[in-house]
Length: 221
Image (tube, rainbow, N blue to C red; front, top):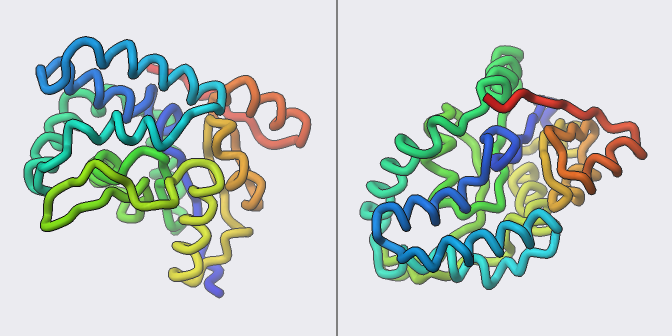
């Protein structure tokens, strides 16, 4: 087992000042790919996520609907535009500095997000992070089906995917550091040696205080 230091980052509301999945829906509405009714549906799903009660299957159907029948190249063209227009201003420069500091110290960085990989991949590229995990999306004959490949990268699913990834890489996950804002990431936070709550939601904040986990309040500018 490698002694290489692994540092894991959640993406939404940790590296980003906001949620990339949520922002993608709003972007698609602005581009007239989705109609305005999607805005209220999107907000309702976001409210459930914050409560730790998200129906991931239903949300994924909703989030991937616009990509059905599109090729990976077509999706890439759309997501690159999304990253440039929407994600770039959302990047928290203080979180980015933490990533760079860890990289300078020779750590391996992994972005692990419940967001689908169609969105996570171009964001990771922009952040210059080679390793990332997102919810995998099904393609048949190079066309998006609108379905995801279980497990999702949410909650226990994220823990499973990161555990499998670390095993392949020969890295001891129990020695890792994990930065996250969300109670949904509790399974992985409990697994690593150094859990760090970044601008945590109320539930995660309470648990972090109770367990003596580090709480990091990053300015959102």
